[in-house]
Image (cartoon, rainbow, N blue to C red):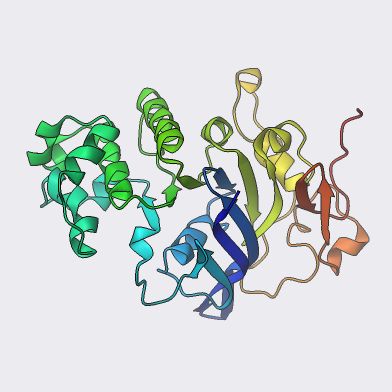
Length: 309
């Protein structure tokens, strides 16, 4: 498989009163053609900042990001042809003054592409009636608006589509429709998805691999079913246990001890040490090296025990 997206030691940092925050702190990953990789973690862990860095909207402090072998640069030249984006709230991401056909056509117009029926083509691909071209966003349902957002993201036929919480603003039944639409489009178009979410149920349904993020770093990366069934990092396990299931209805998840450290402080040792139930003395001073287990990578001095074979 050829790599569509490569991220190498990427850092994004911000100056704030009292110090500097590393929102993305030395992240590396590879996303292959036709693959879906989900990035999960608590709010504020750096997921959306990473997406903005891939889009060129947040400059890197260090490291590199390449899409189809071409670096993402601040001038954004040609990036729209390589990366599409589906934001969380389609009502906010669509211009309320533009008709739907105009919104879908915008990437084509900006990039000097001829329309030649392309708007109609992508509308059919996402299941929208062509009569909706003349409607405004407020005249559509939430699910229809998100289909418009997907159509716009696919208008230029990019090999990579970023999906930033694409179903969070939708009710349960419509959420399932959008997820099935994304999977169906991927099978037809062979595009790759970087799927960002805190909804672990949707992640398990759509993702081939999952990367668990904590305080700007990946703590565990691997095949989705392996990570869900046998989490090795304590944070991954806590995150999975916090997700409601039919078996846990009526029960509150265990609360992690400790506090999230001040993000302005330079991290020494493991970033999860202030909340980790498996903490060892070495965790205070030494950042864990990557460990591998059946193709999965995790960063922990005292990982969750693997089940017996």
